Length: 148
Image 1: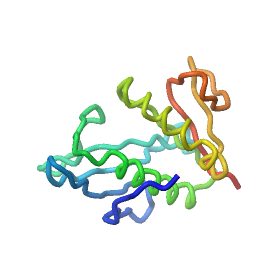
Image 2: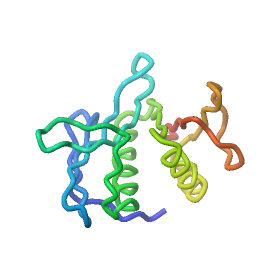
Image 3: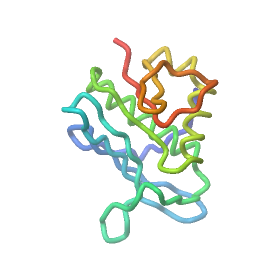
C-alpha cells in the first residue's frame, strides 16, 4: 500500500480540516479534506472537496479530472492516518457521492485490505446495517477506526 502523496498537505490544529493542492493537466486545484463530526462526536464523516477561486468550498460531486487520482488517494489516506492517530476512538465514515466513487472505494479496500486491516477495523454499511467488510458484497458506505 504505497501511494505517492502530496507534500503540500497542511492540517488545521484540531486535524478536522486539511488542505493541499492537486497538480495536473487542469492546473493547480486547491483541495480540502474535512472530518465532520456525526453521532455525538463518535463518528466523523470524511469529505474531499475543491476550494473554489473565491475561497468557498465546492460540491463533493465535482470531478476535477486532474490526472492525479492515485496521489490524491495517498494524500487522503495520510490525512486519515493523522486524524485517527489523534482521535483513535472515532470512527471515520466515508461513502462515494456517486456510484463510480463508491466503486473506487471498494476497489481500493479490496486491493489494500490486508495492509489496511492491520491498522484499521473496517466495516461496510449495507442497507443501513453495519457488517464486517467483505470484498464479495457492495456497500452503501464504509466505517473505519484505528486499531488500538
